Image 1 (cartoon, rainbow, N blue to C red):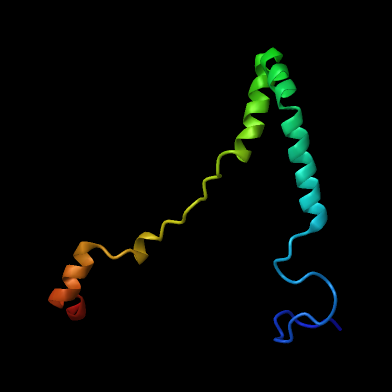
Image 2 (cartoon, rainbow, N blue to C red; image 1 turned 135 degrees about the vertical axis):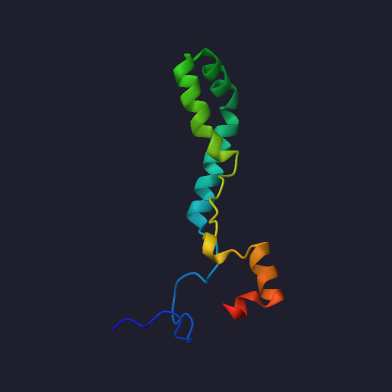
Length: 98
């Protein structure tokens, strides 16, 4: 039977400690970064020579790497929001009389 999560005993054996970066991922990212830096001039030239639909596709695919995504927010339900009228009625004691 597997141990339950967060049983208070921590890690028992092996594996990376929590928060330790993965060496393979780090090396792969460095290689990709190096490749992009070495071929940047070729990329720019090919981009300039591309047709408009291809340029738009490339542009749209690159945006997530430079601009943070917007997070959605939740607006509380109307019934959960206290209005000024609600607060004044409570202060004056009208709510208690109803």
